Structures are given as structure tokens and as C-alpha cells.
Length: 158
Image (tube, rainbow, N blue to C red; front, side):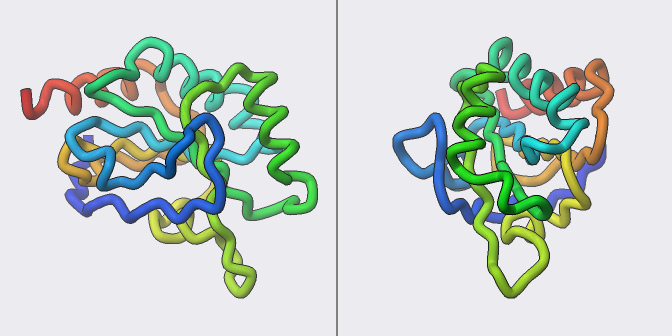
């Protein structure tokens, strides 16, 4: 597991789904965070990453671990509106909180995506209990390795 030890940038979210209150990185301190960045028209997200994030949430989320989705749109903007995202989340049974990454019209990438240095979607970022980025995965994740890395983070600080 890489140990970048950079603190996770704050989320800059325009709207939340599956959460009645806004979520901040500060509010998540003390928990391991699996930040899942996706686009609903990304084939890798639809086929493998969204189901993986959903399984992590269903099996591991609780007082020690949070799964947070980030819908970060950097292409096909007209097709990926909130009403479409709501349908996607419903159809895939996604119940974990999902924020819509704010997009600065003057910049090419959404704000949170750029702050984390994401190259595209799907991306999974593992954040430890004190808020440090510990792993940054782009593309298809090896589930066994990812599970082991989450286990290491969960065991720290106990």
C-alpha cells in the first residue's frame, strides 16, 4: 500500500444524493473512507466499479468505514443531469451517499476531481482515519488487494 500521507482535499459538491446533510472530509475523520469517483456513462464504472463500491458499502460500512460516491462529470455533460443520476442510483441500488462534483465552467475538470489529481473514472481513493490519502486507484481494482488494503486501514488506530 502506498503511503502518500497527503491529507485528503475537501469535497466540493453541488448536490448530495442519499444524504440529508452535506458531508465533509472533516466530518469523516475517525473513519476509513472509500471515495468512489465515477460517471454513470463510464463502462468500467457500470460494469465493475459501481457494483464493487456497492458491495464494499453493504459488507463493511459502519462506524469505522464510510463509502462516499463522487459523480464527477468531465464529458457528456448534457446526458448526466441530476434526474439521470437519481435513476442510475435507483436502478443500481446504490444507497451510500453520492455527491455531484462541482464543475467550474472555466476549467476542464470538475473541482474535486482536479483537487485529488484523478486521471479519469473509475477512481477509488482510500483515506485513513486521520484524513490522509493512502491509496489512489484508477481503473479496474483488484478486489482481493483492495480488500486487504481496506483491512489494513481498518486495523490501524484500534
